[in-house]
Length: 104
Image 1 (cartoon, rainbow, N blue to C red):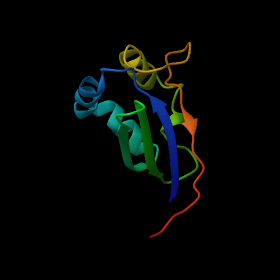
Image 2: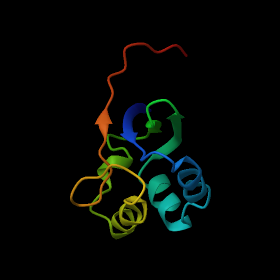
Image 3: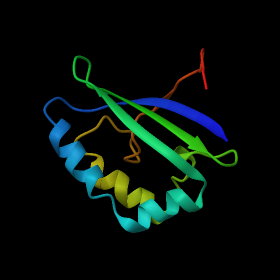
């Protein structure tokens, strides 16, 4: 299983709304992620910088960020665009992170 990590930016004052929306993640989106091989997905929040730090374990070569052509992901992006930094297509601005240490 591969691990992917990336960061995103949340607009100030939207932590609770972000958590609320993710706690009610759409079942069809959750299924798509699972079907794509995403097995272990966590998102952490840095209050000081409003940075979201995501880590996921994936079976295969694709992570959640590779599903952007699907209708449900595009709908989710539009749903989240008002509270995050986004690209013109509503996808979240994501910055891949390089793993420099791992201990199992």
